[in-house]
Image (cartoon, rainbow, N blue to C red; front, side):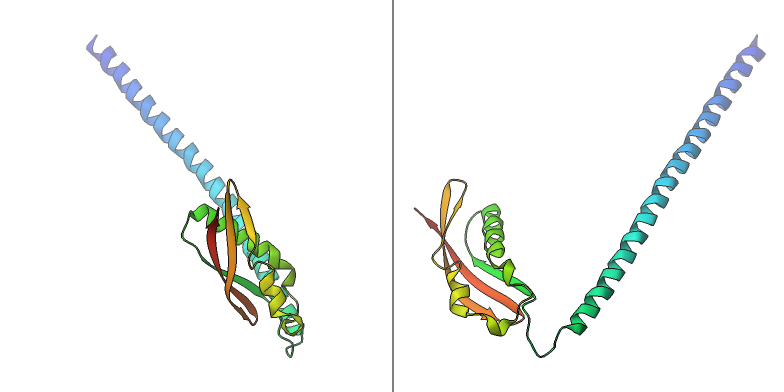
Length: 152
């Protein structure tokens, strides 16, 4: 009778170990498959980025270098308030100026550019904010310093 118990315990232990090994192998196969898929996707995205960078570089070379073109808009807010409201205000202001991107700087009228947001009232949720243009610098990057005050 002692041999039967030992034999049954031995079979049970061997079965558990075999199950652990098979489960670990299956898990390794699944994880390695997913890693391979992610690696292929990353390689594809990197090649796409390289193609886009090469295209962008060629386009920048073909642009007439004598004319200064607006490439970016930088908005600096002078604002002491909620960070979410700050992001929303910056997004709204940025939408006002996006049509200027890619155009020649010499054709811009600085007074009109500053008046787009100067003394404007923005409604965000249940609050009103008044915007004042403090400073404006126009080169390849349009930099605007805007003071934001909570209006009643």
